Image 1 (tube, one colour):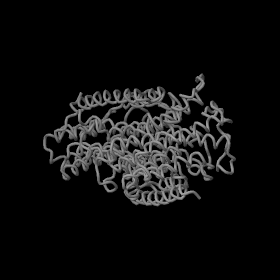
Image 2: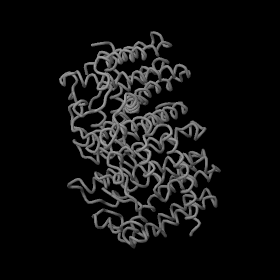
Image 3: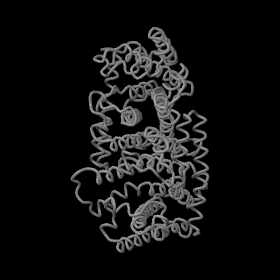
Amino acid sequence: MSQFLVQLGNAATAVEGFLAECLTEQQANGTPPRLADALRHAVLAGGKRFRPFLVFESAGLFGVARDAALPAAAALECIHCYSLVHDDLPAMDNDELRRGQPTVWKAYDEWTAILVGDALQAIAFELTSDPRRHDDAEARAELTHALAIASGAIGMVGGQMLDLEAGRLPDQPAATIADIVRLQAMKTGRLITVGCEMGAILGRASPSDRAALKTYGEHLGTAFQISDDLLDAEGSAADVGKATGKDAAAGKATLIGLLGIQEARQHLDRTIDAAVAALEPFDTKAEPLIAAARHMGQRDS
Amino acid sequence: MSQFLVQLGNAATAVEGFLAECLTEQQANGTPPRLADALRHAVLAGGKRFRPFLVFESAGLFGVARDAALPAAAALECIHCYSLVHDDLPAMDNDELRRGQPTVWKAYDEWTAILVGDALQAIAFELTSDPRRHDDAEARAELTHALAIASGAIGMVGGQMLDLEAGRLPDQPAATIADIVRLQAMKTGRLITVGCEMGAILGRASPSDRAALKTYGEHLGTAFQISDDLLDAEGSAADVGKATGKDAAAGKATLIGLLGIQEARQHLDRTIDAAVAALEPFDTKAEPLIAAARHMGQRDS
C-alpha cells in the first residue's frame, strides 16, 4: 500500500474515533436515542475521510498537531456526511445503498434522514466554534465562516442545485465545459479547498501561504472530480466499489463526455502538476499533500 | 395596536430589509438564480419575526444598537425559516400552505426545498461568524456556538424528532406532562431562549445578567407554546390565520389535552409571571421584553 494510503487510513482512524466520541457526548446531552443511532449510521459507516486528511496535513505544514486539528477536521467531515445523507433522499438522487450499507432514509425513513442531515450541519458548526476545542476565538470564528461559505448557497449546496437543475428542469441548454467546471468546483471543489484553508487558519498561516494552499485545494478538487469521472467511465464496479457507467447511462454532462477519455486524462495530469506546483513554498514538508495530488492520477477506487 | 405589536413590526421591517440585502449579496456572489428565488420565497414571505425582536431587545438592555444586532437577529431568523421549509416537506408535515402562500416544496419542488433549508442553515452561521458584521471575534464564535447547540440534535432538531416519533412510530407510550414539556422546550423553546442569550452575548453581559435572560427566555418559550396550543384549541381560523383544532384532530398530545383549557390558562399566567420576574435585574429598561411576555396571555393570532 502506498505511503499516501497509509496516512489516509491513519487520518480516518483518528477522525472516526473523535466523531464517535462526539456523538456519544451529544447523546449524553439529550439527543433522542433514535436520532443518535441514525447519526452514527450516517457518520460512522465508512468513507475514505479524505477531507479530514487535508485538514490534518495542511495544518501540519505549520506545526499544528493532529489532535489540535481534529475538531475542525471532524466538522468538515460532518458537512460532507450531511450532504451525502440529503443527496441520497428519494427526492434527490434516490439512492438506497452507500458503501454497501442502506442509506439513512432506507435504514430509517425520510423524515429521519432529513433531520439527520440538519443535525449534522449544526454539529459541524458547534465543533468549529467550540471554545473547548480551539482556544483562539479568532480561529473559531474564521473556521466557521470559511466552512459556512464553502458549504452553502455559493458552494456545495449551490453546486448540488446546478447539478439537479441540469438533469431535471426542462429546456436546459447543453452544458459547456465552463458550466461543468463551475458546477464541479462548487459541488465538490469548495469543500476540498476549504479543508486546506482550514489547515491554514489553524496554523495562523501568512496570507501568501494560505493563498498557496487554496490554489492547491482548487486544483486538487478538480483532479478529484476528473479522476472520479474517469473511474466511472473506465473502472469496473468490483474495483470501484459502486456501480460504474452511471454518468453515461444518466446522460449526465461530464468533462469526459465533452473531451473524451484521452484528453480528460491529459487534463487530469496537468491539473495534478498545477496542484503540486502550488505547494512549492512548503518544500519537502508538503510531501503528504503532494502524494495526495499524485494519487488522483492512479486511483482505482 | 399595542406598543409591543408596534415594536414587533419595527423589528420585522428591520430584519426583512437586512435579509433581503443578504440574499441579494449571496446571489451576486454566485448563488444559482433558481436557488436565490426559492431562498427569497422561504425568507421574505412574511412571519412575525418574533425571534429577531428578542435579539434586538435583549441586546438593547446593554446599550447595543439595533444595527449592531441585525446580523445575529437575521441569523436566528434564517434558522427558524429553514426549520419551517424542512418541516413543511411531504416526508415531514406535508403542508402545502404557509401564511397563505404555497410552501417552498409546493412552489418549487422537494429537492429545491431540501437545498433551500440546507443553504439557509449555512447562511445563518455565515452571518454569526462574519468579521464584517461583528468586530469582536469572541462574540462571533460565541454567537455561532450558542445558535448551533440550540438548533441541533439536542435542541430544535431533536425536538422535531421527538414530535415526529410520537406521531409515527408504533407502540409509543402515551406522553406524560414531562414528555410534552421536554419536547416543546427543545422544539420551540431553545430557539426563543437563544435569541435572548444572543442579545446577552452581543452586549457582553455579566454571567448573572445572561442567566437572567436565559431564564426569561425559557419561561417565554413555554408561554409561547401554551398560547399557541390555546389558540389552536379556542381560536377561530379567521382570527388565527391558519386552521385551528388541528392538534385535537391529529390526536396530538398537548398540555391542554392533559390539563384542560382552564388549568392550561392558569399555567400560562404563572409562566408569564415567572418570565417577567426573571427580568427584575433590568428594571424599567426591560419593558419591551415584559410586554412580549404579557402578550402571550392575550394573543389572538
